[in-house]
Length: 223
Image (cartoon, rainbow, N blue to C red; front, side, top):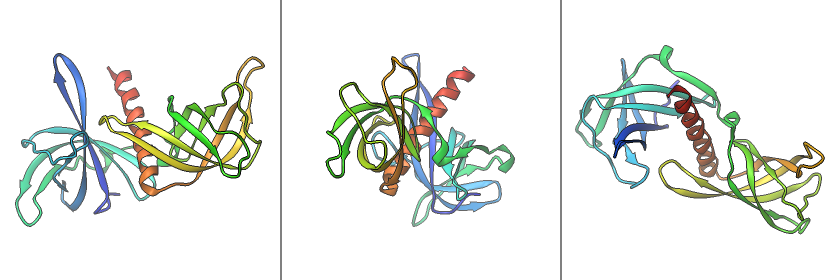
């Protein structure tokens, strides 16, 4: 289930000025032992610098597995090792305690993300809008009044993602128009787009963005 070399994200909840905040870190699986996951030192997503923690520090961890699903689990630091590459030892809670969220391309969340649409062959005039929902496989958005799109074909979009770490990422994707619908007579048209060409790193950013939003929703429901 866990592949050596894959990226794992760690979330740490802290209280600052009586307000709960979540810090995010990324690291890589280095090795796996009985009941322990070995990782390199986590990088703070906000500062992009290595972070150091005491034994017993608890995290919420998640990663994308080989079966294209996102898995999440609770863990804590149980030790460390010095060597050519210093590593931390995480408690492995056991596969039965891993939560399988869903296939990564289907982690769809309803959220407004700023987006700019551009034609490939001058089929329409460029315009900006906001998404209705988004996933690793595509998005849906509103077509603003005074703008239009062809019923089929391809186009290029730019998405502006505000990640939990505070990082702002600009993601480019080539998309296929799946359908254009008008849910109500007085509503604006909506278009569903499928991502057909995108850098791997950009797709991972979208998946991470969606998963962070999904976890935030779960935390609110559990509060």
